Length: 244
Figure 1: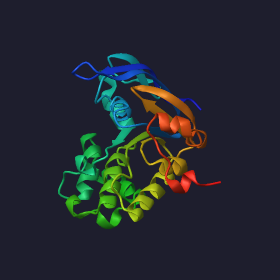
Figure 2: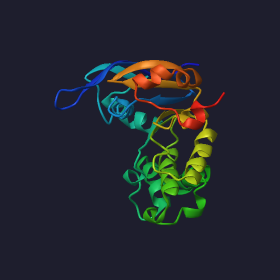
Figure 3: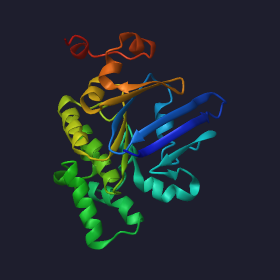
């Protein structure tokens, strides 16, 4: 498969001069589902914010489907790369869920039947039709997370980037979201501390630490390396660690 996402030598500094990304190299093939693991402050979210131009690198380059992530390409890049933030409230701000899901396509110029089709399909995929006309602040945590995903799916992206998608969800909400993510065919990058989620959803995992990619292998290989996990402040849930 061709590279759907390619990062080469990506560097980024915080305003105070600290290095957040220190030469990140990463290729993701079309259709892959890849977990991005690592301790807090390792650069995972900072890297994600470079993928559609929210942040710009100090050095290096990123391409999406061969298109450089540069200002002149931002409108198309931001359609192609959908970010689902850790806090769903950052993406839900309209009176109803349906209006939130319609917001992006409307700003692309869609209207009428095509707009309705996009919205209805996105809500169907996340099993959100039943809460489409409810105010977002009346939803449960799991419903909010699925509604936020629908706002991204309505843009018809080719890459989805999730930041801690299961954080704060109860077991039922977590299971519903995992089922939804497993059903989606597009390329996915899943930033998570939930190693059981990575094992269930992602054949491949990448560990970042101190702004660099320090491991890139099959998820089972990475999760079987206790020394590697300890070095990067990652810990298996007991149910996984005791298998075998």
